[in-house]
Length: 398
Image (cartoon, helix red, strand yellow):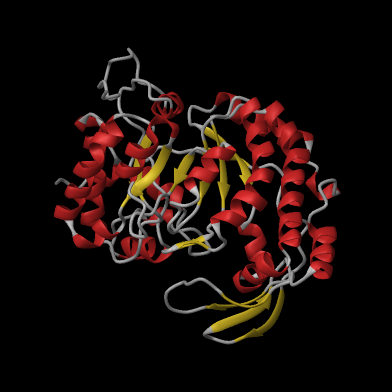
């Protein structure tokens, strides 16, 4: 089956929202959704300095929003509604030390961290975490994770705007459901979490259960008021070799608390549910699918996740966003075309929206990225005149 039917197949063009829904339900489309996952800050800055991006893209603070760059390349957008979940209210940031090269500070959750102020932006160096044991967890929970805290009340005018956007947007709309273990990793640190999973697994499960109950308390109002096409979460709990906690621990201590939340989402008609998780997720995929989470994103290829093999293994039960090996962008045009040709048969069957398997990394030449977008959109079935209309291609041709 090839779900690509070509321009004009449905009379007027499908909206990005209609196209996304159809692709994710293996239905015929005019052409497959064109999505991406943003860019490293250094790459955007380089392209801007080289004159490839409009001068107006750079904001007063020096940043260049991903959305402006994506739209420059014709990328469709997913809107997101964020219920008042997660840790809140936050404390004021406390700066401990600041030099020309780095800053050391305690963030709004009490994490002591050190960040570089010059050179390539990197993951912060974490020095101390607020949750270490049961006593510190209970103090953290009471301060930051009260589901009924007044800070979680959404003003009526904000509700009205969220509702209107979710019901009238021509872009697909997702609801944010946060994290079940990635947040806990952020609050304990990896090493403490690893030890706690062995020394006090009941405590770790208690943390997961509290997050689940918070979601079940807060999400229903958002789900009743708004209209959604997907649900999105975040974890980042895997290395190149697999998850930071054993699959057995996930199955016994985490998945049972995910299931009621996934069930709630599905009761409100949401059957496209993903979580953002880097690294090798192969051992977690069947567990997530058992819980009701059915879409893998961004499916990094280099750690061992092969979207073609996974679609062959799980069939239509598995959905994918991502799965294009970012390393091909460094290797050049021949590698890009080879990777797209490898993915094409799986993409054409539906349930798979291909894009770079994380944010587009630094040192990717603008010409190379243009070639990737050009060839990818042809593979997705987009008409060439539509591709040529992307602003990035005003002065570029293959």
